[in-house]
Image 1 (cartoon, one colour):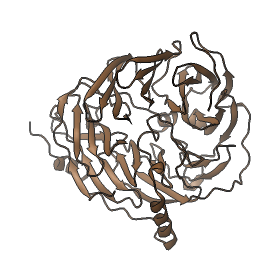
Image 2: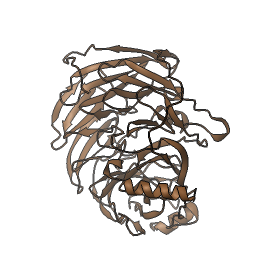
Image 3: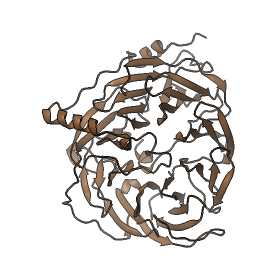
Image 4: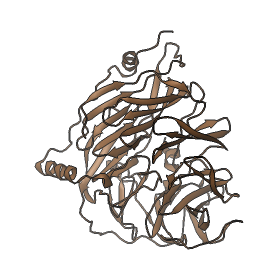
Length: 500
């Protein structure tokens, strides 16, 4: 079979190839130019957002970072980099934005100009039968000047036919290494986590998942099989945390040895994102008819507390957003537009607030995606004072079928993606609060909350404490190696279920 070239695939797919349109600022006033210059000069590594939910612990927290506090505007956008399925995620490092979509693309954070584009090569094993084969690049993870991404290959209107894990030079877009599953996977990799020289992901295998850890140069360290799909895989202090259908397990990243296991009677769903912040692991049990947040000691697995919600007629669902020294921030049934702050010490509710997501002609406010940056809680296209739940600002967006997801908050900007990428900016001075206090009631249509310090057998209760590169376009060469398993179930939120 004659293998389709990159040019022919792109010609059939879109009628053009190779060049992304240069992106201009939406506003060219002198004040905006000065604002952009000041932000670029003040950028530092503390403003980076290198992977899914900011760090390897998936905490979505950048304490010393900067986000916009008012006068919100769309500073630039890109409509050319999404795949047929849209954009999967973004990472921001040293004023470069890495975007996963049809290709892996690097953009200048100040103005959206393309720095390079990496187009994954279709594996030889795939025979499109004369049709189109799409590529879909997942959420980027950046570590030590290398970008790690999972890639799906699938025919027109079909399911993935193959997957690969690829490492790319962050400055040039040149491929460093690649592992293909050679037809061994028809599902995407789990979201890639990069931490301290390790690359962590998983691959579905029949009714199970193969948790796989690689070295930074592409060598497989170890692999373990777990029943069912795995959710997110946060990594901190040399441990990877694995919520499974039968409790939580912490494994040594270097060896795969079990460090501890906990809450064996609790089953976790793959839709739940787990986070680690300041020594505490927060995991969500999503079993009908309710949903429960559980706080565990990240070093020992000891249970601190659990808070359960009974959502009534609604289907249960919880998003664990982020945490700080006093609270953990969640949403229960995102469609209800309610954000909840739980006391970090005992799981009791501190406040809850409901955002008006329907904003008329200007569009809707999204609450998909959390970030705690510079002392402000960002939820989708809204910003909230984390001390009391007061709304700082909201920014309605034109409604899309997929809905808008907040992918990162870095360098004074909020990065939103759907089928396109839109970047918001504004002033960064501390905001003045003018809105009303949120209700402190503990029961709404999203559910009734109950907290408890009871532990499961075998655990105890304890208090917690809380460079710009030359613009190039790079095409990937053929992959190498046969890997029996390197992928995993994708992550999704309740809003994703209702909008995508």
